[in-house]
Length: 218
Image (cartoon, rainbow, N blue to C red):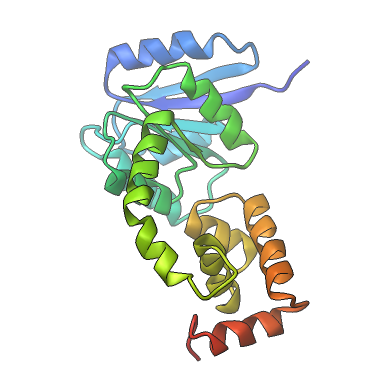
């Protein structure tokens, strides 16, 4: 028998709650263990319910989802958070992910994507629905020329340079993962590529490279 994935839903719109309930019932191993219509005392409610996943709106009365995610970021919680929101602004997405959300799904996207989000997050990866992915791609396309100028003289990609800088600063793989909103597996993959491209074999050599190329300061 499959272990039940316990899900807590926080949203102040009844239609959303009913829609999520219908979608989540499609998975026999998913169990909704609680509902909330505002962010007050939400963290304690989710912990007490033993939920694995919190699906939460941003715009809720009394205490917003963003305030809740900022509180979650300050403590060690046994659940992962997926944002389900009508907000599609990348600034808001970035804030949520910076403070520890593991997935972001817009309410304008197909509700079925919430199942995809849950499965992705449970594997330890970050999830963005197609609407947000499209906006992110458009944004990066606009600033790509500036990125390319920044790495013209290096064999590394911009993302690899980001990872290199954080390694040189002493960040752990987990901390790099949280800082860049990527999985630890992706961090490890970038680390291997950096060592291969720079033909180095140790973190000391990596730090020397970063210092010599003004990527970090003493």
